[in-house]
View 1 (cartoon, rainbow, N blue to C red):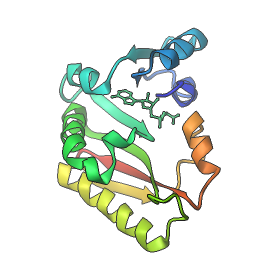
View 2: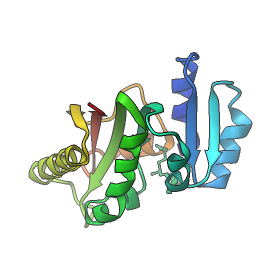
View 3: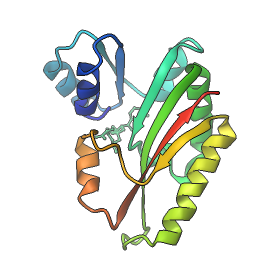
View 4: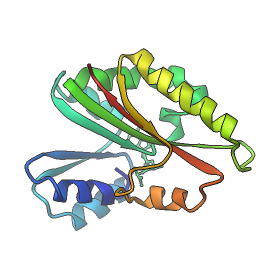
Length: 171
Ligand SMILES: C[S@@+](CC[C@H](N)C(=O)[O-])C[C@H]1O[C@@H](n2cnc3c(N)ncnc32)[C@H](O)[C@@H]1O
């Protein structure tokens, strides 16, 4: 959840749902805990690799993953992180959803050409389909109403940092 700004905005608009923010960085957790006063938010400070397995299978309506650390989405590291998203799948209710907002940059930090972007977007889609998700939509930007520290920073460099948002569902 980073500093929890997006989590707070989402929870404020949907007071009948319970939102759980997960973040490894203790400073971010403390910032969010001292700022947010909504009773429908729980903040859990720790690794999502340790926390998500503690949720009962089939208990979660929606996961929202915004700009995960490269260790959990980078193409070259997929053997390490794919099992995690398999577990996310098992925690979703039937027809539950996963929204993933992620980015690609050129290794030399040059503007990324359309071909490289399209190949990556296709790989991303195919990878999540292979985990068992169905694809509801894929777009080449982040949801306009989403604002977070990292998203706002990444949006400032659209030629070199290109985004894809996948809306995935458990069939
Ligand atoms: C690129 S930032 C994005 C943060 C936030 N979603 C945003 O848009 O501002 C990635 C975040 O993931 C956190 N993180 C990295 N590994 C994690 C893990 N295993 N469990 C929970 N959070 C983790 C980092 O501390 C960092 O705040």
